[in-house]
Length: 126
Image 1 (cartoon, rainbow, N blue to C red):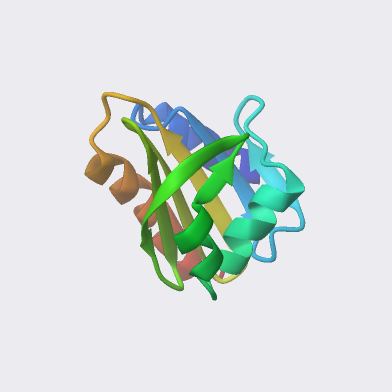
Image 2 (cartoon, helix red, strand yellow; image 1 turned 90 degrees about the vertical axis):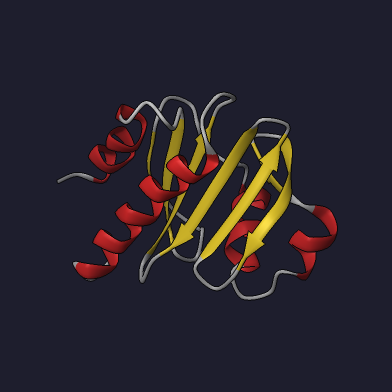
């Protein structure tokens, strides 16, 4: 399966409207839906945030110029929220999945979808 198929499958669920897949270091975009691409400083902020959340805790996380309030951060997952929308970032062995859910979607439903894909990628060595 191509990397593009993974991001397309995330949005095909109807619970996520944008998705991107980056290298674990955040230095390479592997796939995206539509024009969902982060600025270099935004993906760097997220990639670094898995290991040190202090910047995310004090300044939030950003995607496509939008600031998200940090809800959760650990060495695997970062969740952010802006009004009724949210951002889910999950790190695997070699990649970072980033997905956006729109207003009207339950955050738990969206996070489950992204986390399950991350589990799958980890299981196959990515």
